[in-house]
Length: 507
Image (cartoon, rainbow, N blue to C red; front, top):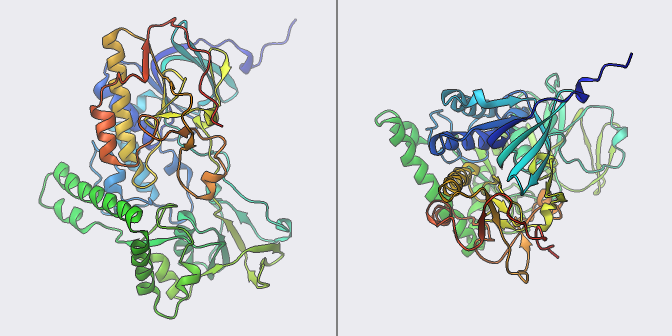
């Protein structure tokens, strides 16, 4: 008698949906809401690898986790943010996303614990076949259009450099991406390695109960303090309908954000001095701002760090926290020895050393049997990829709130699907016709997590539609008003022959 097949080996029936959304985070729920509103006849499913709605805001649970953009602009355009804090705690953001999904009935379309392993496009049928892991089972789902809302970094692990002597340290070493619920840091000495938003969130939060917290950085980051609450928004909520009370301060913040970013491009020295003046005002004339808070690059060459109500500066002034700027020589039994010879004592070390980027949530993608190397594609309008049919992904702004661009991308995808139906076509493929177009980095950022991933990130060209705008108003024109048929996006019927090259290899 033969052995019964394992669950994984069983042939499970395949399902088909018009649209398959990867990820039930901020972007995935955004995509589903727009589909329901603008394409109500389309069937869709959301595949989420985790057990809950929320994405980033469910994954990260370290002390003090909060938004690094104001929620008046990072909230959905269609759903007012009503929490009094606009630099908001992570659990409030997750609740906001979850409530949005429940109120719209989107939660009924989510399949949790479904990890997308691969997606294979077939031109003859104009369908993607998506292989999914569900526990110990493997199943396939087919779809006409694949919409990746899985973010841009690995959920499985963050980035941790190789530290000499790491094994010598006797205490716990923790990465914020996998924060242990049982970690007790009360009355302990803590070193937080890093100078990004995560480190600057952790330091004041942990300093409330830790004995002492040291933020150890190789080089400084620009830090700007803003009020945790938006006084205008909270005042307007008392006298205006929710939609107006949301829209007015939202547009105020959008315009101020754009003005400030444009100023950093035109007058970087002036903006640099403004930022440093603010830091000096908080820390006093005797603090070494030049060493610890003055980067070598210009503002917005890397993302600015936002601290609500100057909490980081207050922690430093209270004597419960410090910033040390130096390089690590090695870990020791009791802490970290620096290149300068100083040894920092610690009971706990936190490696807030960044993210590892990946495309499509780590899924492999093929088109008519040929693997897609996203690092050799060009982005079309910053949301589709040269030579790859019926696939879009959400990537927000680097100089503003993520959701501002996510909303526009969702609008565009809905317009595209409706245009395809109207014209009786089933395939939409961005075609790179200028083989001499010089590739440029997709993200013009000097941050370490971007530089480490240059090879796997798509490229952009010198002009539209192959260049990603970092301008909300330009994107409104591009994605809400410009015609779908622009001579670059090729619309075709099922069975049309895909040209041999998926994309020109970006040298």
